[in-house]
Image (cartoon, rainbow, N blue to C red; front, side, top):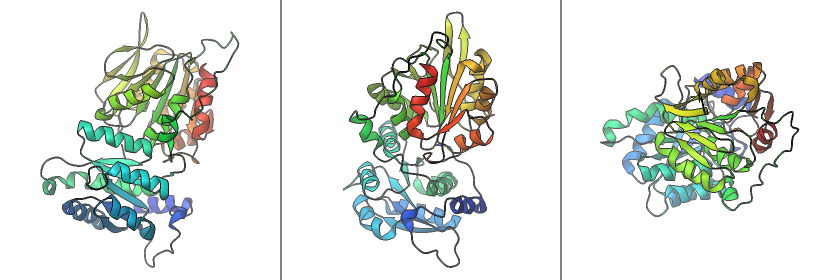
Length: 386
């Protein structure tokens, strides 16, 4: 997941705008400390616990506690009431995923997962994000002591961001979808005058996106009259597994875009992570293809680049766009251009976004046709595109 650098002042303002740290941490303010964050570091490696604690302590603004495994973490959770937990994937006694599930069920707390990005761990990390973990940090390869500096800045920034995350929407999403209790968006009947007005639906998301997409995409009806292309800021090692899992739960087929692919109505196309995807037109119709990431864009797959490529081949009024939870502003500029050209755009509202960065910027620019909470977005997309 991407991140942006926030100054201490910006971070303090963000917490104060939300009334301080999350209400569940209703401890008195510490004298002489502004927005001090309590962090619980959970890792079975003593070396890693010391290293992560050192990173946060050196950065300043953190009160760091450690736990040697999932059981130890759960025992400390009620007493410490941490603002953020960093959680290792692979631990004895209780693995990170089991611990995360118990945290979210008993005392929801922003969690940043730590994992080496092997194929197996990528799938587990993806499941953690679906269950409500705010973000992840990839552990460095090689000798730990020589490579930890590679992730120090990223870890500190993601922990700070996680402290301001909203968790109410993410609790239980994975279980709700898997048991089939998520109600699909109703298929909308519309007049012949409206038929065929939408050529493409574009969705962008970042931090908090996996859990939201796991909830939203299965609600889209098979009667959707346009293809759906999704750009989610995750590594390439995640997207094949995510597409496969979504394909099992969605009403429409789901594909990872790893080659030139013809776009078909009633299909969902998930951009391959760590690269960009662009839309183009051939004689036989629209295609989408994975291309090397453009250094002119900070986040990948770039939502702005995807939308810009679509605008180059499709009239804006025939586009529908949704910008969901995420840090930064990716997608806001190009979706604003779609809106200005007569297209329809929806931004996720602050009340449900894990991080109201990307959708907030779209709303601030006046580029959103509507701003809606997460649970209303699928129905809105269906209304526009069925």
